[in-house]
Length: 277
Image (cartoon, rainbow, N blue to C red; front, side):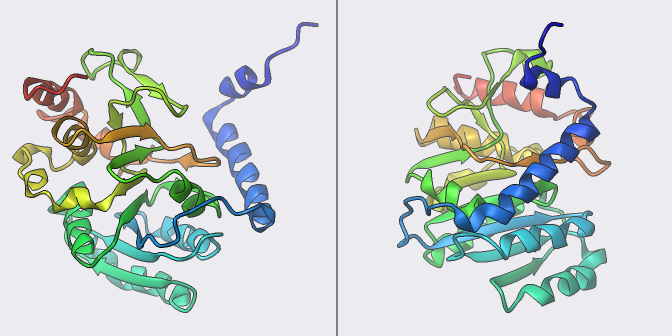
């Protein structure tokens, strides 16, 4: 009987089974996290972690539980809630963790969409933070997430687990872009949802002079600004045990794909500005 390669076998499993198996591996890794040797980190860095939540309060508790057991805990957690209807619930979920972490909760409207990352990061840069980790509320991650991300941090860089090469083609068909999953490869575009960035990028006022119809496409704008305007490094962030959600009714890419301004049209606009991707 022919043997089936284990990776190819897993790729052909239904997505719900793959997520189940990945979640079990994540749980086992978290139980062993404290037994691993600590990676080399610049402990002088003032670190912020920004968790964005919107319409998914049921996932907030899980994220808080994982952040509370991080192997590197010298960070300040900022939670940006853009749903005014669940303020009390968010505060209730956060309260049990306030004696375990330094937590700040910010309640806003969703008018600024993903760009509220930028607004808060700009203020945090003024307060002396050196780097910021972005985590979306639909992401499951490990107890070593902050430690491993910081071990790969470099000044003047923007690194993401969700990294892509656009291959000079329209941002329309999945086959026109390539997922980057190893360090050292060319990266054109970093997703913000699982990323780490030198927070000084948010001190540039030009970053906030974005196309008015691009509020929901902040990841492409940040990638363009870091790469084309500042000449910073874009790189794959090598993180184990990340499980990306985003397939529900609130997934941003589903909400914008049929809009007049979507990622395809936005990429073309950035290419007209001179971005070579």
